[in-house]
Length: 157
Image (cartoon, rainbow, N blue to C red):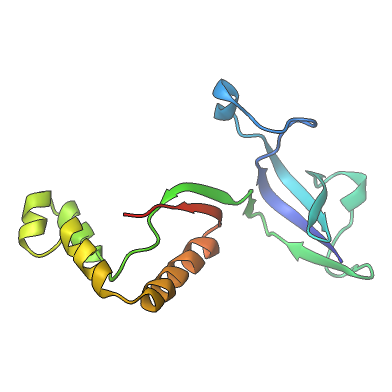
């Protein structure tokens, strides 16, 4: 199966041909192509470039080719997945109230006095079954995947 994503406003993450990775100062520059297309065959990127390239001229959903799926990006942004090298997905319960307290200016000590903080989290974690912890973590992993994270290193607390 072939997929053609066309009318991409900005295609980001383009590396010069033959470049396996960027290091040092080179990491400050993200290669981008505006008004682009991207082709994928059997899960592998097989081509990309500006929309005016001959291979995509006239591409539209009204002129389909056999076994080709056309996706109109409608000027959207397409980029490689995000790799989160430090995430704490596995925890019990919810600490969003503590986050609101922090935004409101409460100190860590004030949050702990109100029953929050890492000691409360550790206690809750020990009281939570492995199955419940797995199910809660699975929901969080699906959330970050839906937002573009393709790889994550999960830290323990």
